[in-house]
Image 1 (tube, rainbow, N blue to C red):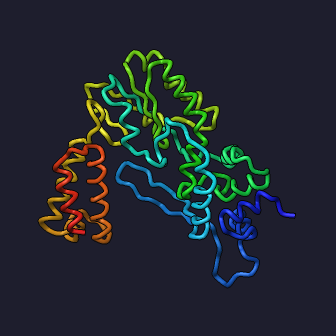
Image 2: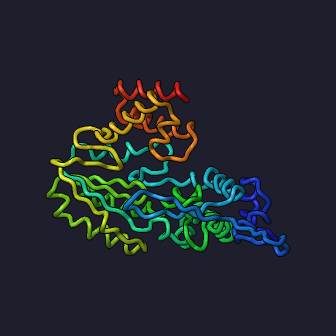
Image 3: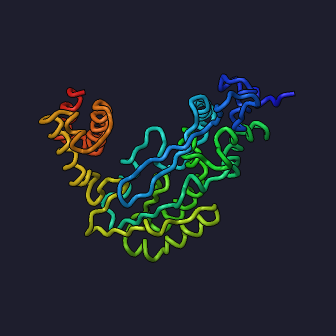
Length: 315
């Protein structure tokens, strides 16, 4: 007899139980055509620029991706993440991550190594337990959202699950930071702390964070540890926060240059000049998104409003 909660999951997701189990076990048909294979995931390699490692994404097929999106909407959004977490949350943005650190004497940035790959199915199962479902139903949801016992970077459920895994860490660390007059936010694997130099140094916060992460199964990426005083340009997730949230001069200059080339030579020629291999409409929409982000940070920026109208007309 089927578990009652599994039947409820099937009804909520509008997917038959046997298909849910097929997806959860990365099922391969017994009889398959010659040369054909069935995999729930495929690997995508994202190539970064010079000096950056390539990223490998385990991307679910269309059917599993649809199921995972329904799990996200029907179940995972019932669980709240910490206020210190600002990535992958409805109504929050990079600006929400940067704004709390405006005007601080110093900013400390720490990075978690191999963030998604370090989250295993046991951690995900503990998150799913908060839904209050039966053990078989909790295990089914866990298997639907993990791949080879890990949280796949590329699945629509993974970012929110990662925030839920980190909730207790965020809450306890945030409480400790408040007692030490330190501001803390986390954007995915990027942790940012700000305050006075004495507060940051005397608290020995790096050792504190390293120890708490170690007990969870994470490690710090020491190569990405950055300490920035107010005499330098303090950037938090790409936003300058020395006096008020603004894009850096180099970012504004890059947008200005791209808009100029688009106006003078057209989108296709601009793409060729940059050596890109993407459709012109995709390029323009990407540029429009960058301008929209700049407008979000600086709503009174008349220059960016002009650029937005220019590129929108080109689209």
